[in-house]
Picture 1 (cartoon, one colour):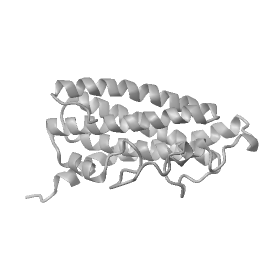
Picture 2: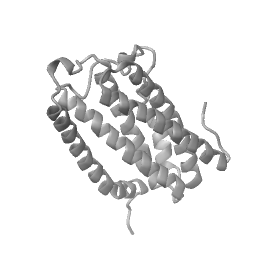
Picture 3: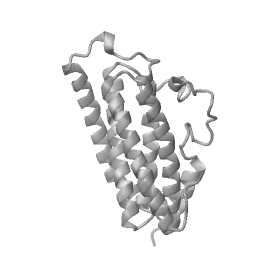
Picture 4: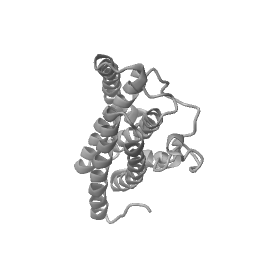
Length: 218
């Protein structure tokens, strides 16, 4: 009799997709470096280490990484096609956007991490108390993610939709901050795309929660 746990089976099922996402991320980084090189970006136009461009790219990359993680988890905790489709959309969209932002940081010659507190570029660096893995507004705690790993069926669907709604709220606020602050047109356009896309998904998730007799957490 196999002693393999549910969590180990989930990890094994996730491995092929993680490999694909990793390869896609590497390709996007390379493409972003090539784009900025071939379009003739000058040293005067490259954002500096404390710029809104750098801060947003770093922080939203972390934010997106958790959204992808939660979506990978729920994909294997429910058979509901609507939730699985939403999870795939989040995985594909946010992994792609994350690759673009990391690629721009690479092309700007900037580190992908910073000693500054998250959201310092927005002037909010000391306004949010990071706790239990939740580094920025909207991010789930490690405890909440562990609960998602253990939930099944309808319980997993509701918890995922609630956590992702809160996650999107935080992401939209940050993306709006970038639209107001960044000067790089490519990044500004990407941030606006995030606002539009995640707001649409929040409306969808509200309907999905209602059909399950639940609501988003305040």
